[in-house]
Length: 358
Image 1 (cartoon, helix red, strand yellow):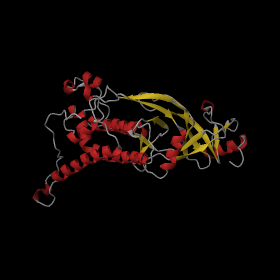
Image 2 (cartoon, rainbow, N blue to C red; image 1 turned 45 degrees about the vertical axis):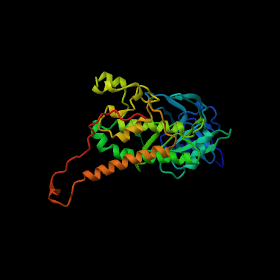
Image 3 (cartoon, rainbow, N blue to C red; image 1 turned 120 degrees about the vertical axis):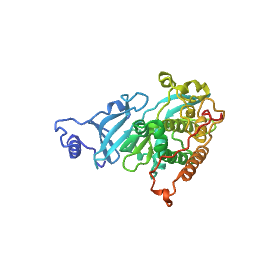
Image 4 (spheres, rainbow, N blue to C red; image 1 turned 180 degrees about the horizontal axis):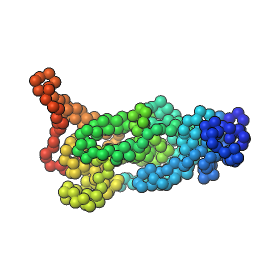
């Protein structure tokens, strides 16, 4: 900003959008975000020519951690135009992740997320924003708020049995998910990776309906393949979408599901061993060519996808086979039978639901 706001001018900027903000309130004004714990509710952060009014810390939204605060991620309002923003402050974190026998060293990289924000500036399937440094050189990412819910929540909230969901809703969901995979391919083509692909990192934009990736700050040291860690994340999401949620061995046991005796160790998810990847053993109507894709992400797989192109090719083959079947089952609208009531037609698979091993 041309002039640093003082207490009086900061209150005036806040009261323009929040008229009930008290006149007597002392406003903490930050130009250095190094200690993100000091940036609190009702504070103002000044970055470049803009000031941001801090509200709550963001919260973790997966695996039962809904109340775990992310103190380095702040919900805020742009005091120039009143728009909602997310400020991601610098937080360095390292950990190791393992997929099968492969170990990945993962770490947060604000610089990498800044690069991707610039790369995807006009891409409909990514969150948007920009990066700017504070007075101490910390790379702060200023993100546009996406109005919508995570894909995972929307799928879990569908009140249909699995078979009805699979035939009625899954085709559109997988079509949009294929678009999301193409977006990840776009990153890989530019020698970037997402780094933290999870089902709650796709927000379904309430206004456009687009599936939009969020949170690109995780990076990892890959050995040979830049795509590998991202691909396993895509596979986990696909298994979740096909299963209309996680199919857990513990739930199958508690429900005394008759399919439980057919499940073998190799049918489990390669990352989360308590989840079933070979879903055709549970839902026999899942087509074999779709289930074969899921098996690439199972403990029993002996060959993994090496690129998003390979995954997309198999998914397109599955989708084309579904379209072909739908066209064969499409009723004749010109003959005398055209006036008969419409019937929901579907191909039922009656052979052994195990599917081929990879």
